[in-house]
Image (tube, rainbow, N blue to C red; front, side, top):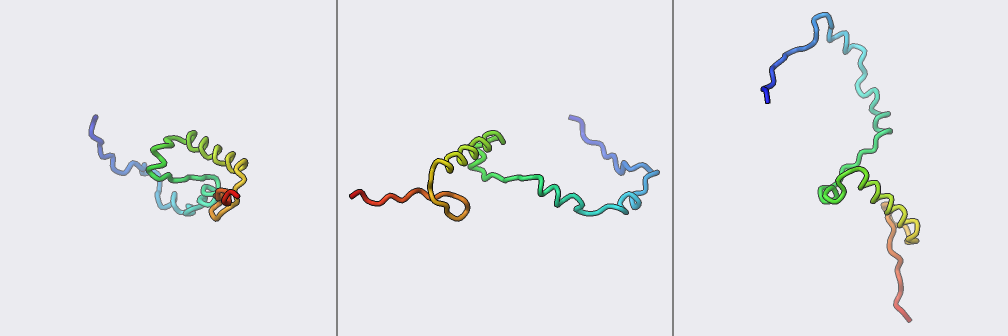
Length: 89
C-alpha cells in the first residue's frame, strides 16, 4: 500500500471559505434526521447472536407475535409478566 501524500489545503483560491460558511446554520437538519432515524446500539453479547439487521428484526417480530398470543399482563418497560398460577387444589 502506498503511503498517503499530504495534500494540504485542497480549497481552490477562487473560493472564499468565510463566504461559504457565512449562511450556514448549525444543526439545520438535526431534528429531521433524528425523527427519521432509529439507531439502536446492541450490547456485545446480543451482537454475537444477532449479526445483522434482518436477524434482529426477525427476532423482534417473533417477540411481538408471542406477546399477542401470550396473554400475560403488562409490566413497566412494555414487557409482559408471566401468568401467575396458584397452587393446585
